[in-house]
Image (cartoon, rainbow, N blue to C red):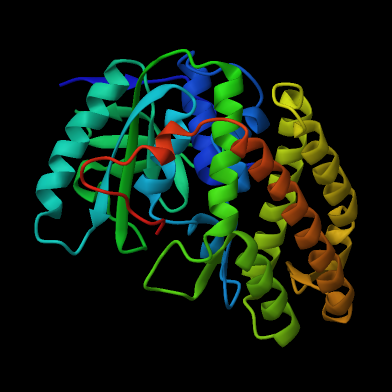
Length: 331
């Protein structure tokens, strides 16, 4: 019998995947810098998704997780593997056994593992004698305990883990350029969970958010969560672009636009109120709030066009070289 317990500290601030990733990589010495820098370089800050009814799950439903997370971690220069699927599949128990072995090997090497609770959290320890995993969700200093027999089982139909390995050095300019290209792709892709079109991404996410608020038939908790996540991400992007603005020509112009956007949306918390013990959107302020969001959409669109213009000035071998098996459209 054996076990491991890593000193990893996760704190919920950004998207839960970003919070988990930053906690794991910084603890392992695989990333140096503030969370907003990781969020920007990985492209995670630019991901925005909204359900038509403004459900809370919108914030984590920005696409197929493996498809979204692998390029994000690749751009940090870190090796990564993902595993997951649907718990209803008859082979789930076999995949779970192998995934559990991989998780324990990772912990033995001193590397935490991203785990879908939901939302994303960090597996930072295990104990074979008790048959348990120790998981942080970032909202409490206390670890959650998951039995080996319950690994992968949660309140959603999905299970997911992501593991990490060694790092290679990538020039900062190349990483920044790729983060801009990922941002453009996210902005241009309206639906990342096809064939389901109840969820919108990128530019269309603004339309779903505004339409949902104006119709008034939205999830109260979800609306607040989406807006708070949106605000935090826009602050991350501004800080990131201020940091790296000198690495590429005209990138400072996009930083200025995001600075203007952040100042524009900063009053949004004032459109929320504590009602019956929970925070909700003030119905009386929805018209003004939607006006702010429409202007924000325009500003962000202008910033993305700066990204697009910068991108065209450099070769893009990832997207211009066709593999023998062809290419897949974003989904």
